[in-house]
Length: 81
Image 1 (cartoon, one colour):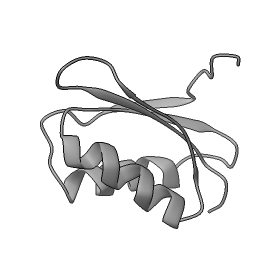
Image 2 (cartoon, rainbow, N blue to C red; image 1 turned 90 degrees about the horizontal axis):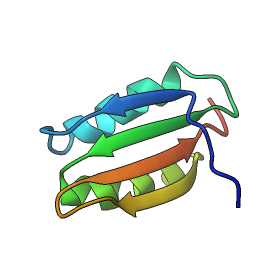
Image 3 (tube, one colour; image 1 turned 30 degrees about the horizontal axis):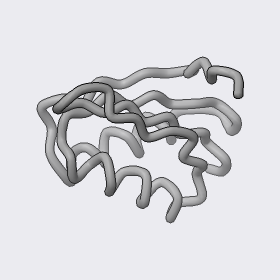
């Protein structure tokens, strides 16, 4: 599989729910359909909740990767407004 290049990146390390989802949702709302958002976070609950919430809102979760002991990278494609 080819690596996906994100169109936008946000770093929400240090934030906890619900701010993690609010920041992610605002970021994806400002993007075009088909664009990909990369989210860098360090709150474990958010690594589960953000992908679930994004899917609930009709977006595609391309990747949820734990990159070290405390950080995750999410890739989310905007599928609808």
